[in-house]
Amino acid sequence: MKPDAPPLLTDAAPAPAAGPAPASAGSPLQSLPLYLDLIRWNRPAGWLLLLWPTLSALWLAAGGWPGWHLLAVFVLGTILMRSAGCCINDVADREFDRHVKRTAQRPVTRGALSVQQALTCGALLALAAFALVLSTNRLTIAWSFAALAVTLIYPYAKRVVSMPQAVLGVAFSFGIPMAFAAAANQIPWTAWALLVGNLFWVLAYDTEYAMVDRDDDLRLAIKTSAITLGRYDVAAVMGFYAVYLASWAALAFGAGLSGWFLVGSAAATAQAIWHWRLIANRSRNGCFKAFRINHWLGFAVFAGIALDLALR
Image (tube, rainbow, N blue to C red; front, side, top):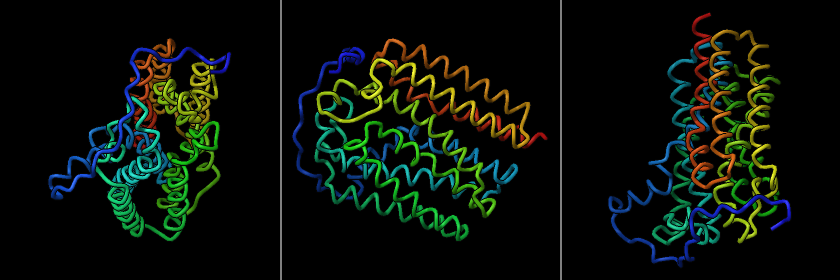
């Protein structure tokens, strides 16, 4: 460990490495719980973190209510693509995940589902999402290929990038320009500015997530922002929150939003301060809780935008 690295998280003992078990050969109905576990169906926090900035951008691009069609496309598309991303991620990380306490029992990692089964599931989910995109316009369809490329790249970024959370930030923010493309048939500079601002929110909550696994990641020599930032991790997370909230506030005020957006931003800021209290001592439980409830921060920003536009 580097001399300036923070204390390792020690409130849970390392789990023994588990070798893969034979892949399940049960009926499709019997395998359903495994596939639901694969796509994190019982953990909606992941897709909610993608959904709120995407819907915020959709409302801004449409100047308010975007209509049921676009709402359905982006809600369902977000769920499908996040689920497909889980399939790809678990295949890419299966050798590492066996040695990480939190991930050792994932279906692909323990051999309950094969690599082929997981990739087939991911491909079908991505195709379903693409079918939704086909109901929009040519600009959105064109940019969907870039979104898919970033989704495929991220799982391998941690092998070569010191802060792979930045790559995840691009992947998790790509719904923003796509929302503008679908609602306004153009992607103005403000959409890209919102993407960059949202990237800092992803850096904040995914660094909290990486702090949970820091002891395992150090042992496996995996690159994460929690390790790269060392003893400055907590300060950096709070700085990331500040950049995200300040940049989105500046862009929203520039678009004419005011009162209700300010209320939503204040609620989001209060949550960010609470997260500081959760992660300040770097406990595993505190860091994981901060990550799990982060979607409420994004919801506060979205609610402020939606209410402000609705009540003008």
